[in-house]
Image (cartoon, rainbow, N blue to C red; front, side, top):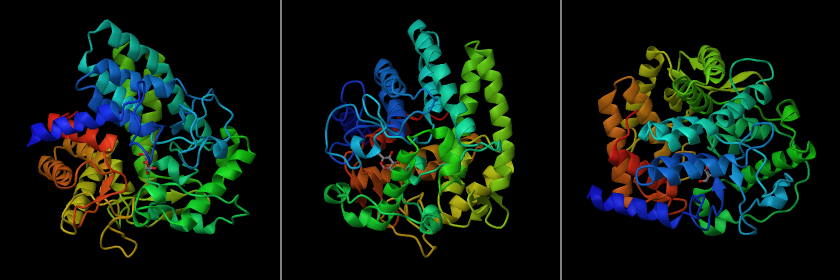
Length: 423
Ligand code: GLC
């Protein structure tokens, strides 16, 4: 069984490979996406480490001068994606979006390096990536944490990678939107509209882009100019985990300045995470910087926090919450609590299971030796793929596939789960 799944997963990686980068899936997402590429590189590295490094290097070749690594790189001329280059208008060649995505790259680069730590080429390629990774991390503190709190804010839901999470509902509803240039979505003709964000949500997404464009994508100004600024514990956990991995890598490769500064960022960030902890909920909450209030929604954000090197008591409490969710659905881990009124089992980030999230949370559980729960997540993930193929995401109640199909990162995570990468 697993041999067959593995070979199908590798086939998808190959089919979605465009040469130097991989598309998340043909049709729905025909360019390079930031965190998709990074996580996909883990799977690629199992058969071709050189190709895996190339995936990351291609992404970083389009890093902005300020340090940001954009969330989409539009490698070729095409109008088959909305919103395409003309909407973003970032004035870059090739065009890129103007936002970023969860910075999982350093976590991945560390793992690529560890596959062949004595190989001169691997050392060289890793060394060349280190300053770029570091510049991206620093960008978060310079541009997304102007008050020096230790944690970064996102200014657009797309940056979290959890586009239409319930977490953003109230904050988006508060934004006073002006006139939006008329638009036609493409996603709803390529995937079931009931699995996708609503028109109203899209209007808010586009309004924010319009606004940022007026500020010429100057990220030194955008944090304070944005009507949306949210500190997401899941996003920050990914940042902190990457910072921790970068520090270890830098230490090993003799890059002392990067190591020391990363350790300082990590210590400040882990301390600041305490401010997002909810004793009542037993997990972390998002924090809305505009109204200076926590966001009470029951999303996966507060659980994904376990990906960061958190104090053990916090991580154990997250494990308890996940066990509770396990009694509420057949397939862990739903992106929103099924007992919450806002839960929608097949709508994108409002309920469905995503294998990349399962992979990261499982990784955090293994760190605290919650092996049984980690195994349940692994089993549920593989059951989903066996039952429903390599979907974009899955209904946690009936296990049906949702969104796009033949998804690259779902294939890559399947490879990781089958070939066991437990670090
Ligand atoms: C959707 C997801 C995002 C992902 C992208 C490409 O926008 O929400 O996380 O990176 O698709 O797969």
